[in-house]
Length: 388
Image 1 (cartoon, rainbow, N blue to C red):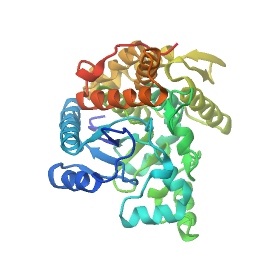
Image 2 (tube, rainbow, N blue to C red):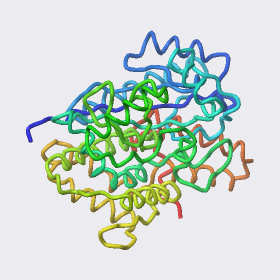
Image 3 (cartoon, helix red, strand yellow):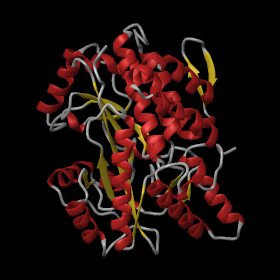
């Protein structure tokens, strides 16, 4: 168990015009050019109104947080110079999908041709976490035991209560929008590596996909790295929350490696419970009650988080990320980005602002909190708990 379980974090951000708070237009080309020239570990995403940053592989949560915090501040600075706001959220509160343009890159042109209108509607941003495993050949066997934990990680990250300028009534609408795309959602219960290899081989030879990187499940074996990749989480407005979720996933990977009896024998019914729990997390975030298959009853999200922390306590201690994982309790107590966005919108409306102005206040809040990165930064206000 001396394996380091190194991890890397990828964060996707939206861009907004600082005056309209909608999709930027004239200054986008200059913004992306400046990012290419001045920010390492950053690249363009599928749509021009998005940008992605990444941390290098590390076994130290503090190192990942420092690296990403620096990248966030650099992006915010470049944006300030050009009248563009950068922010982390699962969906863009004001942008409309009809206004989006794809990034000029061969892969993205191919995706747009394949996905058609759905490519432009893919106006979502996520948090992706890669964790190295001791034996990359065993990654497929580790996927199924990890599935029951996905709803908790999603609930802790929810940051997408608005879509196309409207309140959705949901904490995490991003996954509903993303579900329009093929080959997304909960992966199949592959029996072993050979079963998965057969699936990828036939899909590739039949022309359905170019390679396994076109499988966009909530959890997948990376093609590029010897890692398991978590893709279920919304992009976290607070960097503290992103590092917490990454650390929890890292500990869960170690836990299933050292204990092959955990969630062994997943069935079609088990997968169905995971899908139902994901729906509940999308709808209600931290207020959700999840189905516990073993107990045969519903369990409040706060208790699910405590169960997760207890199950990974040994792993958190061994990997030196107990403090990062413990932040999950603070997320439960204070709420997620979705809760804060809803509170900002409600406060603006109560003060007499119209819907558009209230949504603009949400965008401003997201940009400030993203740049601050931490609960205690200027974006960490207002201090609110989970929405009632």
